Every structure is written in structure tokens, then in C-alpha cells.
Length: 130
Image 1 (tube, rainbow, N blue to C red):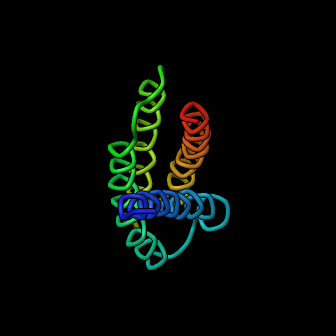
Image 2: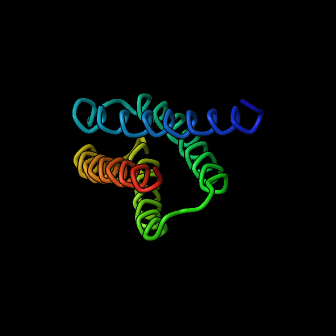
Image 3: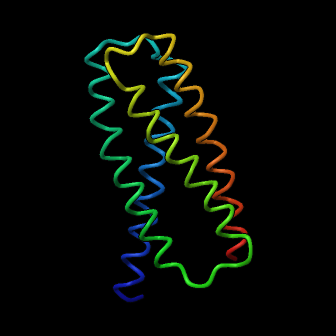
């Protein structure tokens, strides 16, 4: 195992870990903490922004480091990226401490639904790449 392999493994780990934090935190917020205090949402916002940046950067690295892709890969990947942009943007907006609870719950419901579709698309892309 060479240095490129280690970087690749770390990049995938960062990508998966940050997505787990974003999706898990959004699911928790949607189910259990839609009211919350302004302090709690301000704290969540501090987690969302760095996790979003790391997810995007590690995802780009993983795509660039990927070798040949099978037919149809880029179409599915494009849909995944569009959904990911939706998740990242809405998660940041929903973390606004001034957001009314009902609106936050609706927004986070969309984040969670899109997040699970992204996981499904990721599994399909992984299956295509085997």
C-alpha cells in the first residue's frame, strides 16, 4: 500500500464520515429537536458548514482519483451532486437560529429524504464501479 492508497482511503473516510454527520444530525433535528434553542441551532450551524466543505472537497477528490467509469455513471453522479447541493444548502439555511420551528421541520424533512436518496444513488454507483 503506497501513499496514494492511504490518501484515497482517508479521503473516502472523510467523505463518508462528514455525510454521516450531516445526514444523522439532520435526521435527529427533524425527529427530535425541531424547536431547540437559538444556541443549539447556532452550534449545529458550526458543524454543518465545515462538514459540508469537507464532504464537497473529499467527494471531488474521490471523483478525480477514480479511474475509468462505466456507461451511465456520470448521469447518476450528476443527479447525486444536485441532490447533495440541495442537502448542503438547505441544511445551512435550516440551522439558522431565527428559523421558525415549523419551517425548519419542513426543510429538514426534505434534507433527510434527499439524503437517503443520495445514499441509494451512492450504493448504485459503487455497484456500477465493481
